[in-house]
Structure formats: structure tokens, C-alpha cells
Length: 313
Image 1 (cartoon, one colour):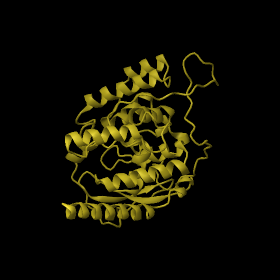
Image 2 (tube, one colour; image 1 turned 90 degrees about the vertical axis):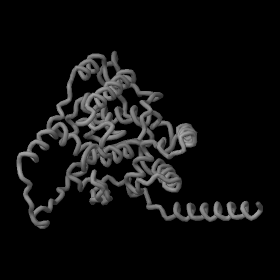
Image 3 (cartoon, helix red, strand yellow; image 1 turned 180 degrees about the vertical axis):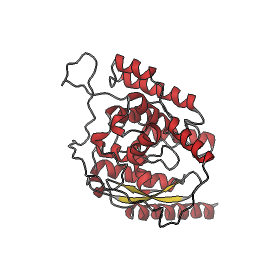
Image 4 (tube, one colour; image 1 turned 60 degrees about the vertical axis):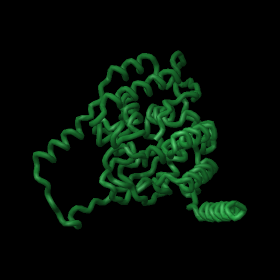
């Protein structure tokens, strides 16, 4: 028995040392504060293959924070991380609930990741579900909260999140699904994209489960109304709108009717055009203010977040 306890102690000590060393080797996050920062990460397609993906203004689909509609930001915050402006990278209560759930189900299905944690994972880590990766994720999220504004974090999150087959970032998603720039998205379209986040490949794939996506987007619109992001007239207009997502179906039909053309790798190479960076002034920890019903133009009121849809990835 003593030997077993000794082995457990040594194994635990070795693991803790390994984790400590791993954390010290984590990449720096301070560079992310630079608006001109660009890097290349690896993303996976739906066939399981990895591809290089440019993060930053050198990506032609990159959407600077100033071009992203407030409704898009709030839709994601209210749906994915209602305490985004309150926590410092991780939500202790949510983590406790996730651990309790996983122990009961004997799995690692519930992650309780905040938006900051998901951003850290997408930029720096793999998708493996291990305790070590989760610890790295929490550590990086905490460091990001110390170095970056909340606005910069949500900008990164929205520009690297998966929203379709090799569709990463809302800039690409806005063109892919609606044929428009992200700045032209309507509240319904913002809620629609936010509704897809928990599972764009299957559970919330609009071409497999459109009704499910629409139902969740209705819930998100209701939260936007409750928090004062949308006025009553805007809310009713958004509910009445039916998103036109037929662009992908047209592409599928074209592929079926047209034989594929095979080209040499050199002729299929696309260069990414660099766009000028857009200046943006943000204060650390500030949340985007929204005009609430009954206020005059120019008067704003902050939105308080205390609800979420609790549908984590």
C-alpha cells in the first residue's frame, strides 16, 4: 500500500512539473495587441485535413472590430459567455459545474470555456480534450485578459471561429452565407451566425437542421431585446426576417451539374490581399454601449449580462 501511495505521489509530482514547464513555454500574447499583427495557424477541414489560415489584416476576410455590428458582438456574448465583461479569462463557477457534469457522465464533454478561452485555444492550442490542454487554455486566457482589451479579444474570436466547411471568421461567413460584407449584416443574420457556433458541422448546420438554427437565433434575438441591444421595432422586424442561406445550395447544385476541373497546384494558388488596418480606440474592460429604447440619440446605456443560452461547445 505504501508503495502504491509513493508511486501515485511520484506520478502526480512528475505531471505537475511537466505542466509547469509546458506553461512556461507557452507563446507570448502581448503581440496580439498590435492591430497590424498577423500570423498563420492550422485549421482543420471537414475531411480532417489541416490547412494554413492567416490571422490578421493580411487575411482578405479579416473584419476589424470597428466594422463588426454591435448586434454581432452582443449576440455571441449573450449566447456563448454572458459574463464576458465580468471574468478575467475563465469562469470558476462554470468550470465547477462542468467538472461535476463530466464526473457524473464519466466524460470530458462539457468544457465551460469562456470566449477568451476559446480564442486562446483557436490561436495557440489543439482541439484534444485533455486536462493538460485545458490548463494551458486557462493560463493563456488569463494572460490574454492582462494584455488585451475585451474588444480586441472578441475581435480575434469572431475572426477565427468556425462557421462552415473551411469557413473561418464572420467576414468569410457573411460572404459565404449572405453575399455581403460583415458590416452589412442585419440583426437576424447576426443572430443566425451566432446560433451556429455550438456545432456548425452537424447540430447547428443550417443545411441539415435549419429549424434548429432558426429556433436558437430567435432565442438570441430575444436576449438582445431583453438587454436593450434591440428596440421593440427592430426586434419584431428581425423576427419577421427569414435569412436567405440559399447561396451554399446553389454552390452544391453547381458542383453536381458541372464536372470538376483539375488544375496544377501552381495555377490554383491564391494570394491574400492586404487591407489597410482600421484605427480603433478602446478602453480596457469597456463594453460596447448600446442605445436603449426611450433614449435620445447620443445617450447610451451599458448592457448588463446575466443570462446565457448555456449551449457551450
